[in-house]
Amino acid sequence: MDREKIEQVCLSLEEPMLETLKTLVRIPSVKEAPKDGAPFGLPARQALDKALEICDSLGFECYNADGYAGHADLGEGSVEDALAILAHLDVVPIGDGWTLPPFEPTVRDGLMYGRGTSDDKGPAVAAMYAMKAVQELKVPLKRKVRLILGTDEESGWEDIAHYKEVCPMPRQGFSPDADYPVINIEKGLMVLELCGKLAEEGLQVKEFSVGERHNVVPGIAEALVAGGQELADQINGMDFPFPVEAVCTEKGVKIRTEGIPGHAAMPELGRNAIGQMLLVLKQCGVRGALATLADAVGMEYDGSHLGIRVSDEVSGKLTLNLGIIRVENGQVRATLDLRCPILADQQALTRRAQDIVSDMTVTVVNCKDPHAVSEKSELVTKLLSAYEEVTGLPGKAMAIGGGTYAKCLEEGVAFGALFPGEKEMAHQADEYISIEDLKKNLRIFTYAILKLAAREG
Image (cartoon, rainbow, N blue to C red; front, side):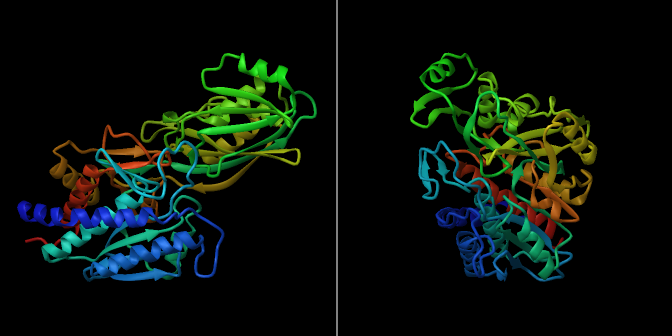
């Protein structure tokens, strides 16, 4: 490969790549109620249409799978043998704590801010322009390269389910929706719903509904409880290792706790505001299901008090995130996001949780099996080679708790786009991507495509 020529082509594509990312960030592609031709709402459909329109202008052959997902092809060959790159255009809700407009890209000090810049529009755009770089290099390809763009990755993956019904899926590829160097093992995902009753005795909770997605660590929690100024003063005088504020209102005492938002795959990097609120309510005398949740979950992220703390040498420890809670009509409903080690028995974990929270019912809402690819496979070794060639850093395969589209492939791994030592901004307030990192991703993906799809010799 002519490194100088590759660099010249990538350099020429940097500005168009940045403008494309800005265009896509401006589309607020949070999942909404379905509309005709827009199964996940109009913004998600608009993001897909715009991305495919751009891919078409770049010279790729495009296909829209009924608004669920779409693809852009470079080169010829069978779909089964194609190199797949799977990314998504949907984003999580805005959440709390933003100081910049989430859907108007802002560039400051070498960073581009906006919801989706790092997860996953930025990496998707880098892959798009890496394909363009390969096209402009006029390198003969031995296989088709297919960029698959989904619009429901942050929710139920109905996009890929539909796509598989109408399009054959390649066997091998990668998803730029995690970390470098290469993620060859992804933990299993299990979403549990815990339901129970509000207690008639003890502190009375009137309102407590927080969280929109199970895979987001909530950063702010608010609850309204029965009481007056004395209770508000009592709470404000308590010593908690996190910010708590209580204000007396006409309807009762409004309590607010401030945490640190984050991604459920790495809950230890955040601080769960729902868990904080549960501990405050328990300290103030709440009973019933809310007290059970405070004792069994609270602010834990490893499942210890829920009886499901497990780990294995292959993929590490189980992680837990309490992402949603609803208190309505005398009922409490909490949604937990579990990332389970590859060797864990998910049914056994559910039974253990039910034993611990015996006054609540535990229901499995969603379940995805773990996924693993050999670290000695050609896919992994060549991706590591591309990473090492561009960065000069040593590459290795590793396991994560995040679940990516890589699981949709028989032989799929996660490859980028977050570099070692960089701050994880996915699902967080003031989400951003480093412009230099985005440019580096363009080069890494270009080398990856060349190593895996170019005709040898």
